[in-house]
Image 1 (tube, rainbow over the protein chains, first blue to last red):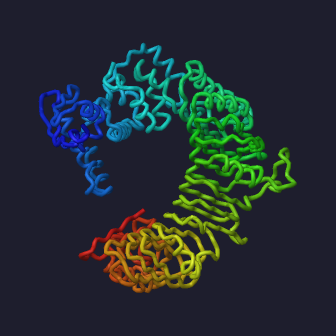
Image 2: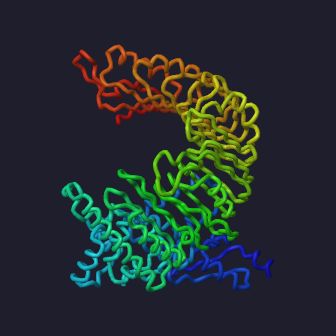
Image 3: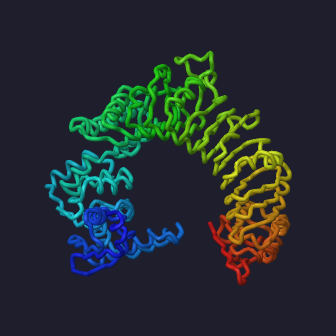
Length: 156
Length: 479
């Protein structure tokens, strides 16, 4: 069975919008959700539907995985890539990619996205953060005032 | 419900853990779901200066300073207690507990010791992994917070950081329990009973990976715990470490004699307690060292050391010496060495470097001007020279640069000019100066002043105008 598994050459990932990505097995190793699916199957070719991830996002994730799985790339080149990668993303891209990373159970990509999002909300006002995360407050003004008073020092 | 608060707690907590405490607390008012995430966020960090900053500042009520501090101490303790209580009531995990107090806000740790003891106990019972306690005291008698060791040494603790005016009472260490969880121990200006006790304590933590002891003090034999003055305690005279199989890095500052035998040690940083008294640092058995950092050592890095001892560390990749006295002539020969930094080292006249894999050589100096030879060097070698100079030294600079052999290795030359109003002839000579450094790819000239003024002239020129344009990239920066 082990031999059969190792003979898997290409994995097909199908995004929520139907777009199809063919990737090599080492690329999906980081995606634990996909990897465990592959491990359970006993087939030479696999195609995996990912109903919670859109094609554009999946393309970006695969690009990230390819760069980081590459043994030829230096650490510096990878850092440079990460820097450009963050620069290219819009705010809502980051939120969607974080959710995708959570769904795909990707440890290092999750850390990477958490860092990128933290950098956006660092030193920002409550209003900015609400707007950024698209949060609608469900507190009454009195409740919110009470909470602010409890930790007054953080709101000065 | 927004998109993010539906994600697992661990992911949102991951984002929060990268933010300053103020930002973290502010997320509590975003929405009910976020408040819940904040309530369970397992990193608790309390800084009295932050928490008390919305109260009237002390300066306004200078006359009643102690009254204000008393009030502040109560408010601060109440606040911490309240936040800790929720974790206790709901049996939530506390992963990190950080406490920072400064005595111009409150009375400091010794005065709230009963509360702190309780918080530490609570943290210990809640699975704490990281404990960091620091305090800053400006005035008054030295009062120490005595750390309750039995509370600290819980099975979950991996990192312990203590800073200033805390006393570790290690007398209980007679029993044979080992603390297998502790990986990182950092003690800064902590009062220890004596050197043997801390050695003993360290030996009880067999899996320690990083140890930092900076300027810790020990009681003199005659000293009693009730009367603590400068006379009754002194610097650590000696420290001997062996048997730690996992030890990767140590940093011992302010310890006079050090002996380390740790086969896995990769990083060692050392500075003696007193510069003008003899010291011993014995790390000969740490054959796997990769990084050495020495500060303020007299008569250690002699030509003989580089000849006889240096080859004993075949894996050494980085050597950094700061304010060290050296022999007049040294030869450094290594195949592995990648980084060499010599900062304000005295006595050096000539250095021969035979390191084919050296990538970075940084040299900073103020007065003495040595000759540097590179015998075999990598094509990627970058030599950065940092010269904090008075304008009168400008001619010496030329000599130094011409002495670097071969010339083409010099990549960056950084000059810090301490010129207020230099005489005209100096500025004229600066034009020539930049011409001398034609082989340097980057030339960074820093000065405190936007414009260097000719004394007695009407003309004011920007620093940039003194840097000739050429095929090389030159940079002038005004601080």
